[in-house]
Image (cartoon, rainbow, N blue to C red; front, side):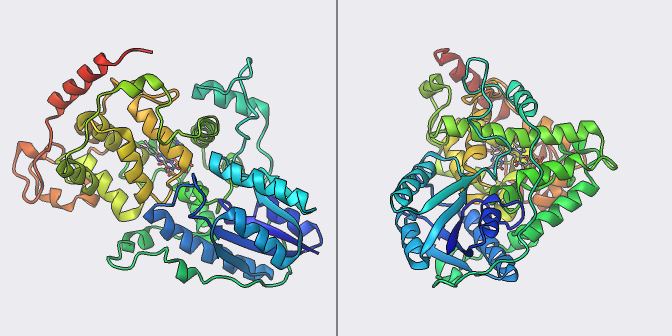
Length: 461
Ligand code: FAD
């Protein structure tokens, strides 16, 4: 008998409940990944995520190969491809780990129903979130709308389970597979991925190395995470996004790391994982989070279509504001941006340029290696003020004060905007000579006032 394992956002062999269930079934095991760019509602991956996926799949195929089986790759609508794979392998059971977007859940539910009619047993597992979105609710059985009580309730509800080991070995027949290169997930010309290759090692091995590095320096996380010029954060986000490491593995590694870190650092780091959980809970109950204001009164907001020149200046890091430009260049160059700078660049687009948050959400979706349906949407809405437990609209980040405070010596600025080395005034280059660096595209004070008066016009909900 055969059990088919369908890999999705869980490209790992350790702490993978679906894979473990297949291994323990005593059946032969067939593993597959389906690139689904056809099912309506499933958002196509952005460019940087495709680059990541290519390398992550080849790493997964290698790990499965060491265990004794191949990874079967197919392209097409999952609702059609999966039944075909079940036929081809004569599988008696199919297993997968749960995903939480509406279109994805709809596909999974309809497959499950179809399989059950055909006598094929389909089972799903919890693997990628510490808490299922429906598990933790308020006293009146509503989803939480505010982070702090949500996370407190999660921690009181259950300690995250201990991670599972990887299976020791697997065996099973080999199905015909498509060739990963034929999926053309990598850029050709221009090859913009040089900086990504230097910055990252996609795959489960790379994820665990990243975690180990972080554990060595996790003491001081609480303060270090605010400074973009230091490697003060874990940089696990793309690995978590593709499920190369599970949140259970990260949680336990960090909690067990009592020697080198303080309880306070670990509490703060745990809460960041909590924000990831909160974002997914929001997306689960608000499937349109990437396109619809969570607080609908923001629908009346008078945002403007960006001029092509302003939008290009923001995307390419040529706004004339060093911290904004450093962030946007870090994003384009490496596929990642420091969290504080994400907030500053998003605030600049939404408030100083008065551009709708969805325009920025889409750019990040295309450029981030950690682009995540829940976290990207919820954080953009957080900055826009339209989200759940959001930063109030009138809190407008000042990029000059932010870089003075969190990158006083300009380590981060100079790394990403090297022409600032010749500027008289690093944080406010327009106040002196700054050869090769652009003038500001908007005045901070005027644009701030414009945004605040637009906000005053908004009917209060
Ligand atoms: P660490 O500080 O080491 O945190 C550990 C983990 O906690 C992260 O890997 C991540 O999984 C989670 N986490 C941390 N902060 C947040 C947060 N605010 N919201 C949700 N989860 C969090 N994060 C994404 O994973 N994908 C996105 O697409 C994304 N888009 C964002 C867009 C904007 C405008 C903003 C302001 C933030 C966005 N974030 C996103 C959240 C955050 O910036 C990144 O998770 C973080 O920078 C990742 O770096 P790290 O792994 O070193 O974080």
